[in-house]
Length: 472
Ligand SMILES: [Fe+2]
Ligand SMILES: [Fe+2]
Image: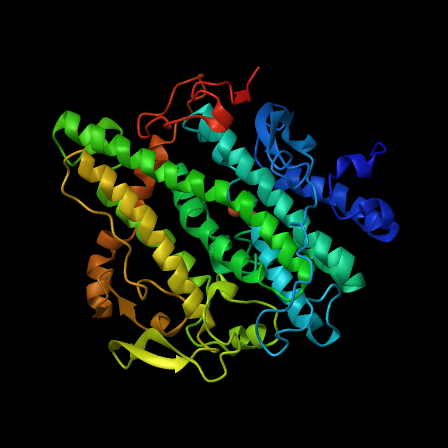
């Protein structure tokens, strides 16, 4: 491989220049990352120029530089949010002590596991989305897919930076392992369930970026509270990029909803499949699936791990410092929805062991806001249907609800009722085949697939018919 000027190549604000050992570790890792990108990153289009956003610094001017480039030449940089002078640990047993600038020895293993678990999701989603380019609904959407992909690549860099810079040899081994696991692989799967599910079509992609990237937002926000300052600062910067991923999801589904409603009005029917649209019932089933898979990512309602992460000062709550309590929670309680025999009940539990559920609650409230906006759009078209979030117990594989079958409206149902009705609640083989069949590439400038409306505006002030990907 030709000599690369890494100081130029890896834009950073971590003074990489001064840390030869770290620079060498990243130089060794970089070609392996590129091999992984070639093998598992977006299929095709690698030689095409794409209108992408690159972060070259963390200030308002530098974090979103737009221009054409080929994906393998993307400058995956390392950025930490600016340090907060005098930042202290804001919760747990170490509350009030200065934030750690080095890894606290006693929490080393736990901290590494948290970083690896977060880091593993980043390349996983790129792998899941690998095949989508060839069925894109427009150049605009194709560009958004690639933007999400390169930034998930950068998020992997962000975690690898922490591992290489702060965890010595074990950290470097973990950095390698992050490139070796594969989404959906039976022998070496990605760590978390949702990241082993396929993303076979664009409807799934938008659901994924709406629901699963939003889980990412909440995990990152909780880690941004960490007493380990480099992790906190890394996550704070990642959150600025994550916002675009969720935007892609929310507007993606919003545009599908809009198009579906237009077709319903135009042809005076609910069954828009005949007109190459995605009917609202199918949208609801996809929503049910992706939402429930994403809820599992928060873990069990009762978790001593979650309590330990908090007590150790490693992972806080969403908006920890805005919460008005003692930030130790030893005596506090929290109300969780759980199972008592075959009944759904609410129960007061220790606030410490229920931190997963609390984060899930924040997430659920956030998910509901987007659903409300889609419903407003349906209403504006004069259509009397609402999309809904299913009950939190629906189709769960982790936590107390994993033991039972729960309908979308929150009833415990028998295995027989589940089998009889699951095709109403979850995407069927027929749905998947129908959606797959709609996935025909549209790559003409300014054109959009029939099942999705054009965006209200383009990227970075460009028109929606801008040449977002140069195909010749
Ligand atoms: Fe990410
Ligand atoms: Fe993301």
